[in-house]
Length: 310
Image (tube, rainbow, N blue to C red):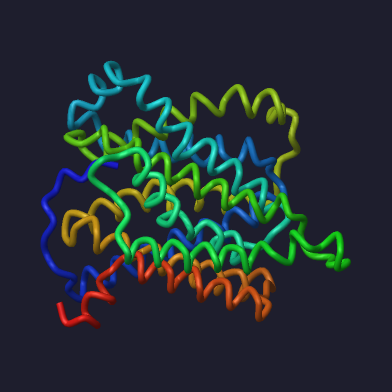
C-alpha cells in the first residue's frame, strides 16, 4: 500500500489512542464475521463487506484525488490488488470461521507480517532478510505450528476440534496479504484513500459473479437482526472506517509505528470472542499466540534495538 506521507513523527497520547482503537476495530472484524457467517454464506458475506465499504469510501473520497481517472487508467492493477488483498483472503478467513472461532482466526492471520517479510525478500531488492527478521519469522512460524499441530494430528489422536482445513485457511489468507503488501508498492504516489476505494471497488466486481454462482443470494432467507448488524459493522466500521483511521494514524506517526496494530488485533478478537461468543483458548493456543506475538516484536526490531542500546 502507498506510503505518500513522510515518516515522522512520534507516537503521542492521541496517536496511541487511535492505534488502540484501530486494533479494537480490526479485532472486531473477526467477531463480526463469526456472527455473520452463521447466517450468510462466505462468498456473499465477502461481497457485502467489500461492496458496502466501497460505496462508503467513494462517498468519503467524493471525487477527490483524481480517483476516477486513476481507476480508469489502472483498473487492471486494482483488479489484481482487490483479488489478493480482499477477495481471496476474506473468502479464506470467512470459510475458516465457519468452523473456528474469532480468536483463533485472528491469531493465525496475525502471521501476515511474517509472510510479508519472506515474500518481500524473494521478490524485491530493497527488503532483504536481516538476522532480526529471520529470528522473528522463525519464532512466529513456530507459534503457527503450535496452533496448527493438534489439528494435523487429530486423525491419530481422536481430537474432536475444528478440521485442519479450517485452521489452515487464515494462514493462507495471511500469505495472500503478504503478496498484496509487496504488490502494493507499485501504488506509491497514489493517494491512499484512492487505493482503498479502488481495491474495494475491484473486489466487489470480482465477488459479484462468485457470490451469484455459489450462493444465489436473491434466494437466501433474510437473516436475523444480529447478523445484519454484524455485516454492516464489518463493512462500515471494520473496513471503510478502519481504512480511514489507518491512513490518519499513518499520516501522524508513519508506516512503521502504524504496523504495531498487528500486535493489538488478536487480543481484541479474543476478548470479544470470550465475552460475546463463549470462546476459550487452550493452554496450547495461548502458547501459540504468545510465540506469534513475540515473533512480531522481534520482527519489528525496535525492542531489540533498545535492548542493545541503539
